[in-house]
Length: 236
Image (cartoon, rainbow, N blue to C red; front, side, top):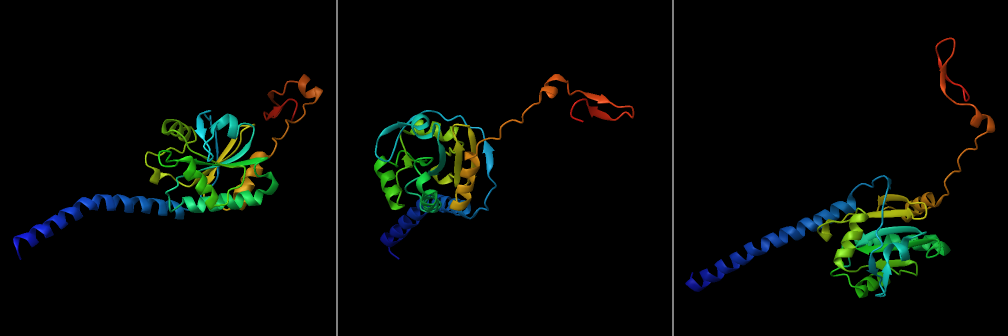
């Protein structure tokens, strides 16, 4: 073996070592997304959210206020994506497309869909618009990007911020902004399940039970009867 061939082999070996950390990181990111895609569906949970009115851009490049223009007084479903994602984001896009069709005439009028980028540096409005076109997005489905500081602020408020875009998980927020009722659900749930949650947050709260004049007059304190058993004065 000549000195030149030894040098070439050594150089190739060094290059392979340098590329190894990058390959491992990519494999770990892909594995993380695959795990998220196959993770068992979590039960929906109620949330208390305070949504900032940050300035963002929609898929048409228009500046809008996230809360005032997209959320306030509306029923909304919000998911989180990035346009170069090839694992969990495409199925979430398909789910939203089917949900929009299932909502029919309610879509865009009573119920709005919002997809927020977790990679606003890469996800320009043009890229977001192309993403929407890929899934046949109709009016009433808004794709949101913007400056990184404001998008990060929004993601933190929605409990969806991750330092690395590859670490984001498939979640969807479904809310009734007028009543401040929010639920977090599995982002890969079926459109039927999401529609059921939309109905749940859309339902008007039960009115308080009527109080009779007698109940207002008498104090419903707890007393003891002759046998020493606690009893309420009015309701028992």
